[in-house]
Amino acid sequence: MPENSTSPAAQLSRKSLSAVDSRQARVAEEAAHLPEKILQFGSGRFLRTFVGDFIDSANRRSVFNGRIVIVQSTSHETSRLLDRQDGLYTIWLEGLQRGKPVQEYRVISAISRALAADRQWSQILAVARSENLELIVSNTTEVGIAFDADDHLEMTPPRSFPGKLTAVLYERFKRFSGAPRAGLIVIPCELITDNGIRLKEIVLRLASHWGLRSDFSKWVEKSNRFCSSLVDRIVTGLPSPDRIGGYWQRLGYRDELLCVGEPYALWAIQGDQSVAEQLGFPTIRPEVIVEPDITPYRERKIRILNGAHTASAPLAFLNGCETILELMEDSRLSRFVESLMRQEIAPSLDLDPAGTKDFVDQVLDRFRNPYLRHRLLDITFQSTSKMRLRVVPSLLSYHRKQGRLPPRLVLGFAYYLRFMRAIEERNGRFFGRLEDAAYPIRDDEAAYYYEVWGQGGSDLDDLVSRVCSEERLWGQDLSRVPGLVEMVSASLAHPQERLEAVLDS
Image 1: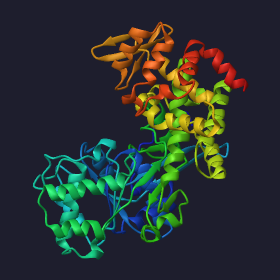
Image 2 (image 1 turned 90 degrees about the vertical axis):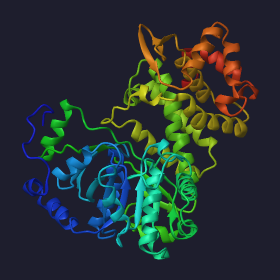
Image 3 (image 1 turned 90 degrees about the horizontal axis):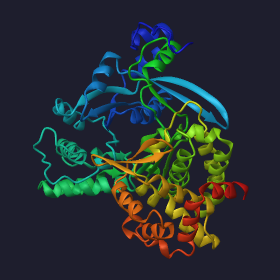
Image 4 (image 1 turned 120 degrees about the vertical axis):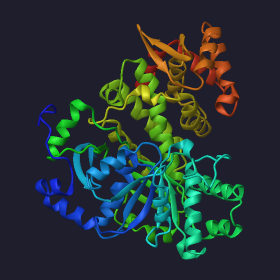
């Protein structure tokens, strides 16, 4: 169906769904009677395409049998649209699996309602007092898990996410008189290491800061399980106006909450067998893994997927590509990326080689997804911190294990330095230049590189030595790594020759 076709007149609802898909309409009708078992802080597309997917599929298999109450802290738009659509929305998954194109969709009926924290706090506290509540999930961005000394229990609501969570747990503690059976599983999905541990520490700190009863803190410690987790699925925004009509035509209804993402997903949850049994849905979704230690999954994702993104994005951008797909459609650059993963990053990891090989295969499928337009400039956002966390550990580990430097990771580092060459400042924003076009450098260290390149751009050895020895950037003096400064400098001076050399190696 052409993407500019006239959109269907009917908006998604249980009634309109019954006219186009009676089977899914029956599923939605049955789900409408399930109890509210999950309180979800965050209403964005990621959680709706991720947690909503897992819970909905579990409900269809009669495994979880519960719905989600969403807590909105900012916009009320999701709540309004969910009300209009009877709590329904569609996830559309498209990508490659084992090299073959996949497109599938499903109407999600796992949402009960969405509550606005600033207007419906009393209703949120009522959910906290419910016998049915079992699980709290969140995705409030990385800065959401932070201690706020000016937060207060008396606020309606407390302004921080940990403050809201503490108030919810305290309400539940009072309602059930601290009964152990009233404890909950709390699974944060924010992309920070040990997110469950950090969130629990802040809740206990707030309990002390607010002067709450000491037996409440003991209840939080002993009766509630804060499970760190790792999440992974690419979810794009709402399709652009010129494309969304095509989706709606194929669905047979208008869905203003349509979520488009990739088929791949991983939810690694740190917990024991009792956590897995209580959640239920890990038994029917292999993408959900509950294990006592999820560190290997985190290392694999950060170093292979995120590391390859960070190491290749500046190189691909400065070689004329705009998206990851364009990078993978360039035979030379795609060969660089695959060799980077298989020959340098994977060998630097202390993980099961067979599992790592399978993961690399999956990542390459994801990079080649013909339906996603993942912009390289978006990947370069905060490249310095990403380089420190995602790339430098692989470079150093490879050097330690192999006794030599990894040429592709070093070349990626050199291209990162070239990308960070800010030549213009406009009102505190910095820009580099590619041929005749300016590009934004969105990095907290942009001003530092503006100064460094301005002072030492003519002497590459001196510039690279200065940057590598900056422990503030890397947590150590990288100039002490034998041969690194010289190899990076040579790659900066002759980037195309070095690229051809690693492609031929």
